[in-house]
Length: 498
Image (cartoon, rainbow, N blue to C red; front, top):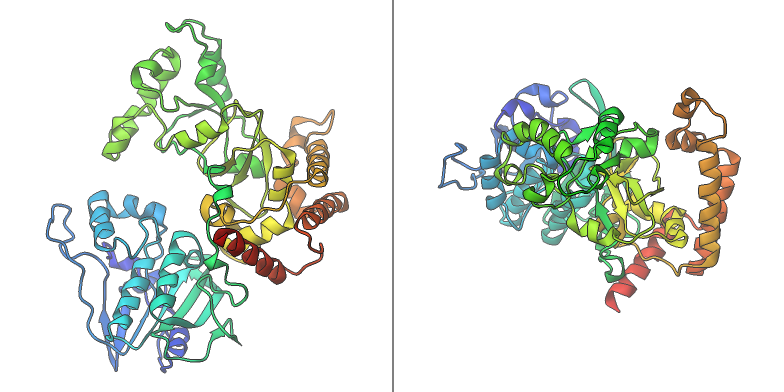
């Protein structure tokens, strides 16, 4: 699978050797070793690839490469996120790859997942005893987790380091290491501790990877629209467009020139940016908004002409305009947004004229009780366990509509939750925007800084909210995280089965 084999390297062979029950003497790996992932058979190391044979973009007879029969597979597959695979490897190559691994590896999984699946299949047909592979911590969640689920279906994970520091291109990252086989090994070691089982998310407590999507949560949470081109404009450019009254359709440019909020704006304060958003308008309708359309034609069209065919065809629209989200938000007096990736799981109210774009998650609800449930400890514990951890645990995790929200069994929405949520928002907004504060002072007042400091008044607000949510579940407010996960999982499975 490697177009550039230098992007992959050997894993820390000593650790992986431990995972596979063999003794290996070799240096620490990383991208800089310049060799592809390897399988070891006795004293011979074989370079292996998961790439389709016939890597030329014009090839039509591509096939999955054969790996030799071996005793052990040990490797450090390349670190490349699912969102970057097409950009780095090219569309033709990626489409071939997706076709070869369809039904086995999700299309948007990270690149390393193909090595995990290939090694799993090798073990399943008896061509390998066990494997030890390294991955970013993304392997524990989202689409990536599916390959670990498949490993547990045909065999099992018997050894794992869920969170280990690693140096990649000079940067400190955190990785996961996974040892797996056909289920023959009876002991289970997670993070150096003997455990009864290792779940597909590399935990040993409640197996929330078995949680089902709940019908009650469908159609509420959406990823923000993704532009993939320069639609954003500064406030000055937006003001010029908004002041123009000469559109042939007689409509104001405010229809399509909107304030825009990103994950950075939510966590670190507003940048004051705007965007040109034609939604799903046909080109003839969009062209009636003269100044915004001509701006997009001059600045977006040249970019789109170099991109994928489906983006070129609708060049005046966001790459992913999210029509389902727009329909769900229609008629709402406000809606809720959260960063897709965040150190703190933050939720904010957003006005309907504001567009939350790529990197945010949007909830089509405008009631305080729902907001309070999202901002409770119970939802945060669930979301962190279901999400993909980035680096060290304190750096936060990724939130997704399906695994993080749609599996979450919400409690009854009560008046007490709504009151606690309103109190939190009012006091938080007073802190963020004190009367008479200068622009310089306001820039220092961000949600990230507030939650980093977590003053007593903020902790008290959240304690009151958590108590209200706990009461709605009928549970004590002081449950441990593990007990919360156990109870939420049981509730999820009960509702899914009912």
